[in-house]
Amino acid sequence: MTSDRPTYDIDLYSDEVIGDPYPHYRALRDAGAAVWLTKNEAWAITRYQDVRDALRNPQVFSSAHGCMLNEPMNEAVKGIMLCSDDPHHMALRKVFAEPLMPGALAKIKDRLVTLADAKIDELVDSGSFDAVADLAHYLPLTVVTELVGLNDEGRAQMLAWAAGIFNAFGPLPNARTEAGLATAQLVFEYINTRAPRETFLPGGLGARIFECADRGLVSQEQAKVLLIDYLTPALDTTINATSSAIWLFGQFPDQWDLIREDPSLIPNAINEVVRLESPIRAFARYVTQDHTMGGVALDAGSRAVILYASANRDERKWDDPERFDVRRKVADHMGFGHGTHTCAGMHLAKMEIQCLLEALARRVHRFELGEGQHSVHNVLRGLVKLPVAVH
Image 1 (cartoon, one colour):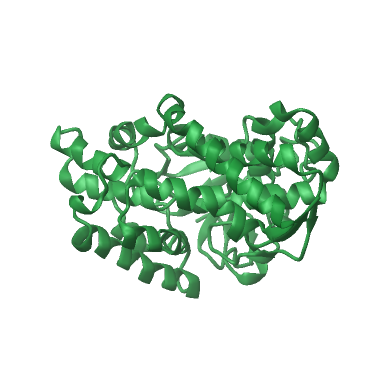
Image 2 (image 1 turned 90 degrees about the vertical axis):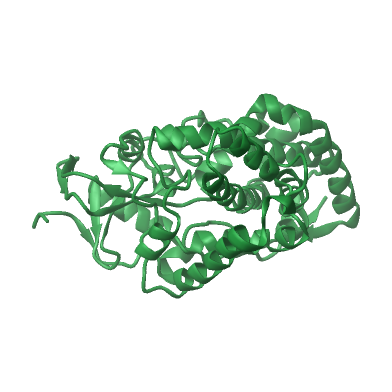
């Protein structure tokens, strides 16, 4: 390794940094294009353009060696869609993503609108609610678990499973990573032994994966692996973005006024929420060869933490990046990733959030926020509670 590399002597996965990450992201951006995290033994890639370049260069920044900072998890999930490079990744993604494209999702739009309207009427009539448990959880836990076609056991466990697996992306030693590895083991056991194809309801995405295997589009083993991709990212990211939207609109009522006056701003507002409070803060990549980024030499065989949440607040890209602005031109944010691994479920997530915000815009003049609480999580950024009174 080079002796003149920029370094940062803070554990990126400590409670302190997770609780208040943005000053650390700024310090990392200022330190260099790539900064060696001495406590985590990995590079931090934090600037917008460098994150974009890395995500467009899987030949150097590979997913196939795992996207986690610990080898037990990298080994356990080898070959899943998230942890693969093209052409293997694209072959899996073609099967996985087809029912999640806008055309296919149009079939469930009316159901989402009906459910969102009824839930918002109920919550607004009550006068106050928890924007996480009562609002943000509702559509993902109602529609996504139904869409996947999970049985009762899977539906009851899906939220805890997803959060646990994401915690397992962290470094070792780390208590959250260790707990996440234990949860991941339970999920693998469920998929491999207690959840044969018959346990997935007919017509759901889980059953469809096995039907694709019957047609030879993927192997039976790959079908089981793809189930992990459905179980993990479909809930927490949408939940966190939804509750973060309420949190931001409560703090910036002028921005909510703009939404109420012009609901056509809602799709762009969702992108701005995801930019400012990115639900996934980072995934790792494996550096396959010696590579220079911004004058910093990265060594083959090292790990790089690709910090989407930092790129989305990079002063080099965004004017006044800490400001919440629903009119900002923000379609090229990194909150859903970039390149071949762009989030396959982002269209469903945006549709769910849009249905809720449209219903709220018709009923709510102001959000009065109580004391919220952010989660302490290795990968996910979001609230675990947010009391709200509505006017």
